Structure formats: C-alpha cells, structure tokens
Picture 1 (spheres, rainbow, N blue to C red):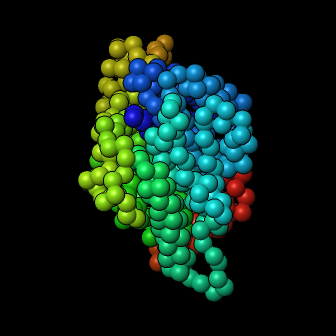
Picture 2: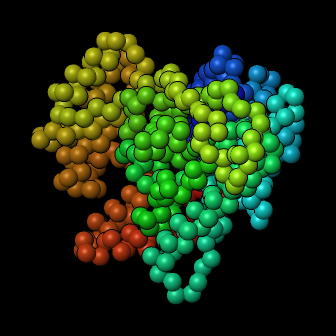
Picture 3: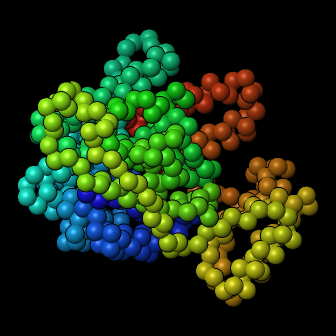
Length: 430
C-alpha cells in the first residue's frame, strides 16, 4: 500500500499581480508522472486546493483535468478535504459525480462523524485503508457561543471542540478496523495549525482561529492512527519527533519568504502486515505491535519558477543581479534595500541593471525610505503587497496608538475578521 500526501496547492494564487497558471500546470503534470512512476495507490490532498473561495476558470480547469488524469492512472483512490481557503459548497458541488472516478470529497463536517470515515477497498473489494478525512473545522462547527464569555473561554471551547471531534472520528475508525477483521492502516487527514509549527514571513499562512492558544498540540491526535497527513503550513515538516505525523507543505513557494525552500511531497508505504485481527487484539484499540508500520520518505518537487529575495545595500544588490543576468536565468526578484544612503532613484538603477535580461523585479521595498516616511512617493509598496493584518497594524502606527493598547485592539480586530469569515464562508477576505 503506497500513499502520496500533498496539500496547499492554492490554485489560482498570484504573486505581485503575476498569474502563475503555468507553474501550477507544470506541478500537476509532474505530480501525475510521479504518481505513475511511484505506482501510488492513494492520493491525499489535505486542503487549500484553491487560493480563493471562488476560483477562476483556469484554476478549475487545472483541478478537474488533473483528477481525470489521476483516475486513469494506477492510483485507485483520491481523497480531498477542504482547507480554510476553500469554499465547502464549491468543493462539494461535484462530489457525487467525482465518486464515479473514486475521488472522495469531504468539505465540511456533518452531524454524523461516520461521513468522515472512508473505508477504501482493494481490487478484490476487501478493505485496504481507512481514512479519517477531517476537513478544516470552522469555529461555528465546533463551538457553542454563550453570552458574556471572554476570549479565554472561546479559546478553551475551540481546543476542546477540535480535540473532541478528532477523538470521535478516530475512535469510529478504530472500531471499524476491529470489526472488519483486517489489520488495515488508519490514516488521519486534517487542516489546522499545530503548536510549534514552522512558518516563514510572507508565506500567506493565515491564523485559523482567534487567540494564540488555538494552535493545537499533537496530543489531540489518538495513538491509534498509523499516519497523520496535515495541511495548512507551507513549510514541509514533521510534528515534534514523529516521523508519521507530517505537513507536506505547499508545492510552490507562495511568496518570496519561501524562495529557496525545498518543496516536497510525502510518500508513505505500509509494508506487509497481518491480514487478520487476532482474538488477543480484538480490543478497543489495536496495540502498536499489531498495527501496520509506515515507511515515510520525501520526494523533492522541481522548481518551476525561480524566486529570490535580495537584501542589502545598493552595491551588494547590484552584484547579485549582475550574477543572475550573466547566468541568463529567468528569475523573479524581490528587492529589499537596507543601505544607509537614501536612494531616491533606486528603481531606475534596478531597471537599468536588468535591462534586456530574463530577470524580472516584481517588488521593491526601500526600507530606508520607509523608515523616514511611511507614505513616501519613493515607496513602491502597494496595498496588494499587504495582507489584512498588515493594513490594520499600519493603521495603528499611523494614528500613533500607544503600544499598551495595540495588543488588545489587534485581538479584537482578529475576532471581527474571523467572525466575518465564519458568517460569510464564500467571501474571500484577502
């Protein structure tokens, strides 16, 4: 049994106004080839398939063509869960049609946790894998609002709701494993932010819930799982010291903060295991020695569009640009000027340096100018360069709000934004 775990495609995402359809198409082509060459049996996509709740036609075309190609390959099953960027209604709309291709969509939770427990059969129609497909858990799905409750109460309820939901789904999966009489692997999927998870500046990863305590710990996941496939964080990483609890990370760098980061997908292979549950193992949870053991490895994803962030004074920036021009490579650059001298003609110098080459400068941040005046005409930063949190923080600074008041105002602002997101799930706030 071989599984491929990926997530956070963000189809349709742009970078500094540049469309990236060619990169996404190249990645999906590579993924189909990898599935075939690795003889993958099951593909897991752990959320954030699209970048917005209403993706454009090109992004949709890439997605559906990919699913059709995978259905015609050696891969027998595809499981897709919704992330916080996805519209549950949009993902769910073709669910019944996609079932004919053995593509299983779980976009939101229902009253019955059994809807999130998928038993996948092999070519002999016998169970070969149980997947707990838990989508992004929205606040309103897992927390009851009580009048007069404080932020701390909300955070505790969120964590309790998340933990309870995963426990209920995993207990049901373990029960089905025991009842099946077969020692098949149990894989859990999720889209959330775990405590200690690694992020980088500019990766576009949003906070999922109001309050810092809402980063869940690895302790919420039951010991009965054999592999945990997570989405949301863009840096490929394992949770703590566990080799079988992982974020696959995004396949493309979503911003210049991820430039140079090695992207990958995760291949999980379950070696030969006992096909029947012995009488001594017929308890509520199979002991670890009786469960399938996962062998995990990463497959590096090629770079389809080189990105680079160059920081420093004008001399060091120009030296690096000249090196890239001489290499004749097609690269997108973010320039961060940190020199002591005010360079009022910075953009002109940079444009002259790349003239006639394949090097393109998508963003320039003149930190020297920004330090002198936020609204300087030489600051080429635009509203499109900022996220909704940056805008509010800049607003506080512009109005000279005392530091002592800023933390509480930022907390209240996050709560308002999250409330809007929950009440209007199909409206993109970015």
